[in-house]
Length: 249
Image 1 (cartoon, rainbow, N blue to C red):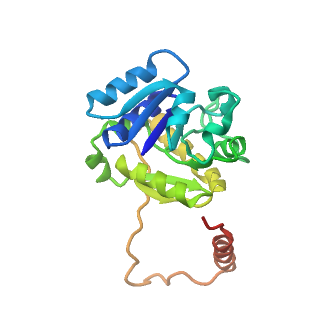
Image 2 (image 1 turned 120 degrees about the horizontal axis):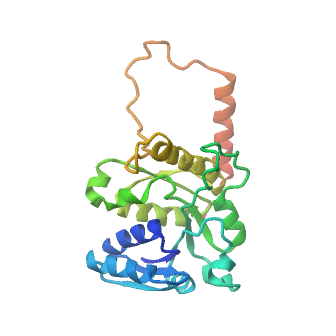
């Protein structure tokens, strides 16, 4: 797959190198300076075969899947006024809101960063993912990381884009978790706040992760099991209605 890294910072460099080593063709883009070239050199030194570097616009033109790392910066300010370079492409938004100056007291999310990006790029296929782990995690060998079952939460309105990003996550050693439509990025982005609190606020460091486990059902309901409730029935019905209303792709 051709992957364009738009904004080669810590996360873009590390994930781009990881995908390149896994056999993807990767183009590192940057506004200027040597960051994109340095990332390409690191990828080659790690064994990648096809890596390129240049401007953010060139990266956007190259990739079938684009890793969009500029946080809350309008695409026209990143690649210029012609946004047709994004048309039809999978655009991954890995961003979280800034940590407030007073600490981890985040305002409720009315519109997620991913939804804002989709509004700016109506002909792209935006996917929320990779916002719930630190860059340091990907320094681990893929098989070591895969054995840990670290979750990659994926929200998008496009099923083809979901499959693409699930494969890219799996290639890095993560376990994809389907979080439904793009509006559920409003649920995924607070998970980024949780992991940043654990890493920084609680002092667990960048190796702290989030993982979803689905356990086997208990053999017996020794404490009475779940009993019928109006809340459970109402929310189960709403979930079924939402599933039925989802567009097919």
